[in-house]
Amino acid sequence: MNIKISHLSYTYAMNQPFQYEALTDINASIKSNDFIAIIGQTGSGKSTLIQNLNGLLIPTMGKVEVDEFVIQKKVKLKNIKQLRKKIGIVFQFPEYQLFEENVEKDILFGPKNFGFSEEQLNGLAKKSLEIVGLDETFLKKSPFELSGGEKRRVAIAGILAFDPEILIVDEPTAGLDPQTANKIMELFNHLHKVQKKTIILVTHQMDDVLKYANHVLALKNGKLEAYTTPIKLFMDDKLMQHLQVEAPILLKIAVEIKKKYPAFNISKVRDIDSFVQQLKDVI
Amino acid sequence: MDAIKFENVTFGYHNQTPIIENLNLEIKKGKYTVLLGHNGSGKSTIAKLAIGLLECQDGNIFIDGIELNEKNLNQIRSKVAIVFQNPDNQFIGSTVRDDMAFGLENKCVDPNLMDAMIEEYAKKVNMHEFLDTEPTNLSGGQKQRVALAGVLAMQPDILILDEATSMLDPIGKKEIFDVIQELKVKRSEMTILSITHHIEEALFADEIIILNNGKVVKVGLPNDLLYDQNLLNQNALEAPFIIQLEEKLKQANIPFEPTLDVKELVKQL
Image 1 (cartoon, rainbow over the protein chains, first blue to last red):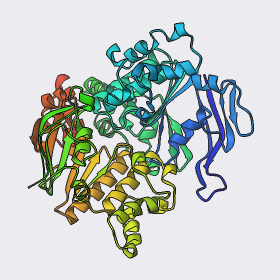
Image 2 (image 1 turned 180 degrees about the vertical axis):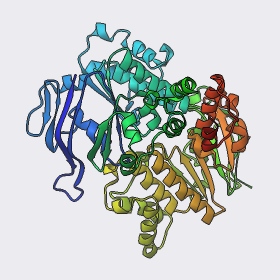
Image 3 (image 1 turned 90 degrees about the vertical axis):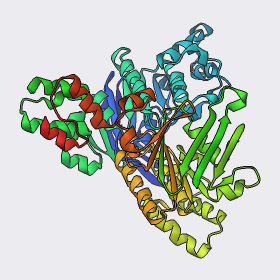
Image 4 (image 1 turned 90 degrees about the horizontal axis):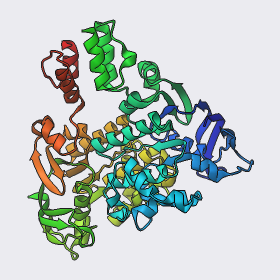
């Protein structure tokens, strides 16, 4: 599924005292099976943007097209359920959306709503838990007695259960310990590489942007400031300063190394391992 | 005297396997302590027990030497303030200004002084332009700033931060960290307990406590604990970036002298 965003603006509380324009004239296309990172300071409009992609919010101006679906003001959106089945959003702190008496029921809530048959539902919760790295002993547990990291995984499993083509994740690792965070990022990477899903990742973790994303979409004060590859963005000092975002320290080191060893290939640096590999090649 | 003291504390939900069992913990008065532990290690449970949101099944908890029980809960809550991970759980006012005033009103602050205090603390966290905004219309990171400002304005003796900057970008995190450090310098008797796995934050702690499965694994100084790769691995924590890099360089047989200074390391390569 391809997403096309044209002249999208979004204003909260229009014509009310709290009126606030969160997004201004955004234009961008997202291709099927891409891995996109959306970055920007807190309050730059990241979360507002993703909610406009599956019709949770309707653009105040402009439109969003997702294949045949058109999300636009004053145009009735047909089959909105089908759209939302295809674009799954894992919100910030998804564990606060858990509400069922046990994990199994919670995971199956989405699929049931989308009209999955009994046959399709059979074993689905267990399978979804497996994908996020939890075993079947969790099925009958109450979501409220799980730890923060476990709740997060259960919430993600609930979205994966209805097998969306596009997965939007809003700061999925905020508040998680580093090892759990790594596992969750590897999970998204697997879904992208193996299951060919489109991943849209909203994040502050520039290390993750460098490591996983093919493209990065940078927002500031509701405006789209850049839509390019992570390396190109991070190497553009002026733009980075304007965005008030700091490049990964690894890349800063890579730039210094490049000064010493001109053969060093910065564009291949994505994490510590690939950095060391490149360094080995030139030393 | 300890600001917070746990004596053989046991707690579990609905008589299930306890999350913490026979825990002994001492948070020193006037210090900046960082409690590190992976998800599910019992960190947040400790925070909730310390302010009496949860009641322990066994053992005793002392705040500033006073035993925490139903009778003196109010007295204790006037000393301790907490910022939760998700600020949505603690907004009350219809605007940022009202929300910050709520805490101050409860502390019976002179209304004539209140406005200036609200302005001052909102400015510290860079949210003074949003004083008349509805908290629900703020982004996650902005909400965290407001929640922090509201709590700081109350000038608590003991401040507990439970992943209080998790939704902020790295620059925002640093700003908030600087505000807290600045307050600490001004009010040296204030105790700060930060619950986090943000390892760079732990670098500046007076003391680090590592927690796993509801037990204290180790107490020590940043220099002693953060470079102990085995200790960190065993407790699902990650070493600081430079240590990770040096580990991989070693594996690749690239020669260098270990250092904690990135610039120094680059010079050697």
